[in-house]
Length: 344
Image (cartoon, rainbow, N blue to C red; front, side, top):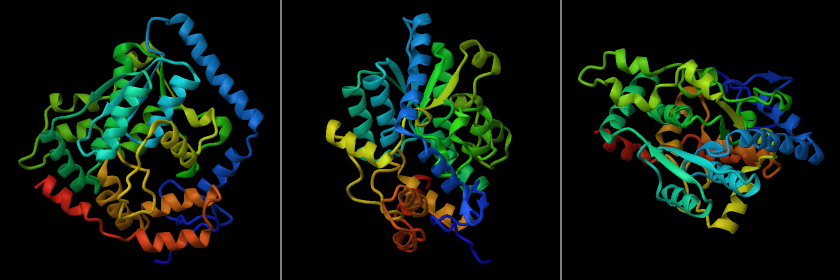
């Protein structure tokens, strides 16, 4: 099979959720639309976000202003900074603990709680259940990280419903990965996006009802993965807002700011499957075996994601991006052995 690539970035025609127009992928096209937004319009968008929270706080002055899903990564740290320091909100931070944070990720998560004046809940399955989920999901869908994708987009919604908090504040809109949305869509988090994208189409029932030999699960093992009922969502009027719809999102500039002002740490050792060292600190496998499986299934890996982002932002030429892809995408990370030992 001959691969056809985007003329502007390094994504292949078979990239996940991508479409192409005149040789240019939807991620590049969507990025251009967001890039057309003027500074004045970004200011108006931020004012729109501020007005949403001001109206909410008048009615709910004694409750948390929002829930923020956080790990130890750059995006959630910046979300929390923006909420507390720029919007003057009192958020409730919710971390799904998938058990394999890098030390830098753990450090950043604790640092965030110390310096950004936010209450924090950490919630995750037992290690025994996590290992079983790793094995079953890997065999079923080639992705041991299903539990992480599920936990990140489920436990914060459960907590929001329990505390009756209306707004959940997410980070960037995935425009430069998929190009699915226009700036004027003001896309919000949805149950459909959760299941079809994050959960790969699988839900909790698959693990409860499936036949996995000696491995089995009960409902109490997976409480953290069960999405709230519609009645609970409606009662709390829960809405998932993406900060990237209201302010100009630039991950690299955000990282520079966080390092300078708060001492946020990247992974100085460096990853084996990409040149970036400030992404995916919340799960070591995201730059290891998980990305190897992405390469096996789809023909491209994490370096393609990062290079495409940097090409669009003008930090790298396409030729330089191609070199990064050829150097990193195919690498079999040593994290493979770590994972094999982890799940025995």
